[in-house]
Amino acid sequence: MLYFSFPDQKNKMSILFFSLFIFIINEAAAADSASCPINFDYVGTLPWDASLCRRPLQSPGCCQTLRSLFGVGLAQHLNRTSTFYLPNLNTSSACIAQFEAKIASMSIITSPLPICFNDTAEFVNNASCAGIATVQDWIDTAAPASLPLESACNGDLTGLTRCSMCVDAGLRVNSYLVSSHPNSTKCFFFAVLYAAAIANDLGPEDVRSAACIFGLPPSRPPRSNHRIRRFVFGFVGGLVGVSGFVILFLLYTKWQRKRKHDSIHESYVTSVKSMQPNIGATFFHLRELERATDGFSDKNLIGQGGFGVVYRGTLPDNTHIAVKQILDSNSTETDDDFTNEALIISRIRHRNLLPLRGFCAASDRFHGRRRFLVYDFMPNGSLNDHIFTSNDHHHQLSWPHRKNIILDIAKGLAYLHHGIKPAIYHRDIKATNILLDAEMKAKVADFGLAKQNTQGESHLTTRVAGTHGYLAPEYALYGQLTEKSDVYSFGVVVLEIMSGRRVLDPSQSSKILITDWAWELVKSDKVEEVFHEFIREEGPKGVMERFVRVGILCAHVMVALRPTIQDALRMLEGDIDIPRLPLTAHHLLQMPSNYYTHTTSTTQASAPTWTTTSSSGF
Image (cartoon, rainbow, N blue to C red):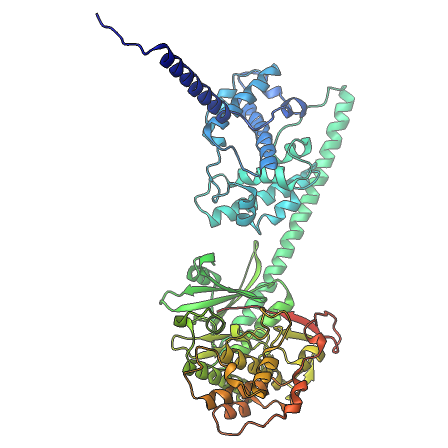
């Protein structure tokens, strides 16, 4: 006989209470994990046709109806939680059971339900569409292809035309997602849920939304006499005929517009290709650039500015390139700018100017017209990356590097102004548009704003373009553009390189231009304080002071006192003397008060349009 040893009474009570506590916790957790977040009361209020589910042998038609009805609940859940489908299997099972109970309470035969909902995992969010789980994921992944869905599926979708447009928009989004994420399997159902829950302001429980988006058959009207039925059928038949004609007409009109658009695009591409013998650049197909940039992946994004985004890419021969995509490329004006930029850059060849390798003009139904410029990749990035870094000496430019970069920029500008006819004004000289190759040689880049001086003289422009702080005052305020507008910007960049200080120091409460700051120090015989601390003990003080004085002179507020870029280069190299600025002329360097706040957008020459750009970073 076996004997069991029992603990004393106190221990037995402790074990009992502990076991009870664990049991309650487990039961609560199980109940929580099995709760359904969907309220299926709409099943009894939404007018849907249940006739197919009253006969047990017609389960296929019934299944389609019941699954559509269940989809209304999923859309309701998405609208409330911004989450597609259900979080786990327990929740999915609980929702199916609750839905079956609701159907059973309406005296509808329940035998088809196990057939219709035999896979509880089907309604669990397993990111089976491009990794989408939430509304924000959808916005980030499906845009811009989902924009037509927003408008086409909003409002009253009664009628064949409106409903067809909504369905067509859903199919296009599905095609876009599947093509960009081939392993996706349920993208169309994601589009259906998004259309009902988010895009349509009537909500998924509205019979008009449910009938079109989910294909849920509405309840049939009560029977009438034979004459009324004939009238209704005749009227509906005529309406369907008219609707069919309207739809065919709209489709034909859309086809004609697309054909015209494609014709214009092909004509444009043909004209761009015809430029190749004259400009010596390569015409790239879009698929070549997509392969080179891994589908314009974010990991290859290396710069973004006011006129485009830049991606790093690799051609099949392992050549590294920078691909600049022109923003807002769906306008004729942008096409003209694109062609103009391609022509300007590709016709100039100089060791201190970034050459154009090629271009691409493409069009598709999701993105519209797309324009690209292809350059050689500059491994050392932009000048901005080196002169405004932290105090880490490993990333600081030495005095010889700074000196050579300044001379390289001057030589590139001298070629633009005097080496070719007609002269070209860059109009956006700044640190981010100076790129450095593997040997730290500077190349002037980003000719998106470049302008040819076809008349060979100064002129007024109603559209001022450039970057705040680098614009010559006469150009920023009055639209007067000359070759010395670039000289002013060059002077600012020289002072930035020499000092490591930005044109407008954000750390200062008052907006003091770098030219005023440098002039005050030079005037007070404190020129060494202008030099960046890293190079103060490196170079010959006389040469470094000469570079600072040339920078101040080039960035002088008075056009007449600025040298040409050729003379500035000769001053930098010590071939000619620097004119002595009178000490009393300091007030001439003070900018007009409205220079800092000039943001008008009129088209008058006296108040030109202001356009600001940021780093393009090839």
